[in-house]
Image 1 (cartoon, helix red, strand yellow):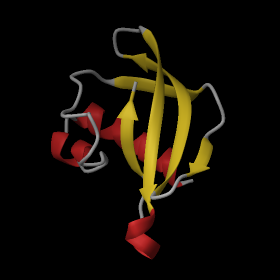
Image 2: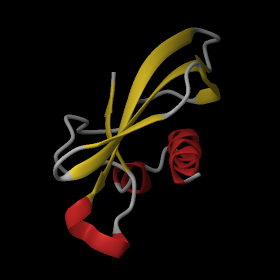
Image 3: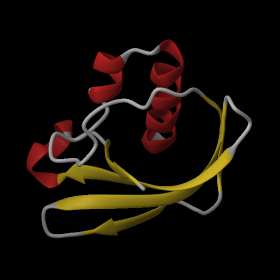
Length: 98
């Protein structure tokens, strides 16, 4: 699934400290303005990915548990968007990570 690939790419770019590639995964309207300075060792989905259709986009939400390099675990809600205006070329992007 595209969303899982996006989550894996985010983890890889964090690990490689590739901010340009990382930011290419993020929607321009997102409140995320830069890349964290940490490595994620493992991401585990805590919930199913739920997709809702809205007027201008599809929104997907999933709660994940991330194991960071300091061995601390964090629960995050990840939000993804796929914009209808992009038609057949629409790609899932990261909208927010809470």
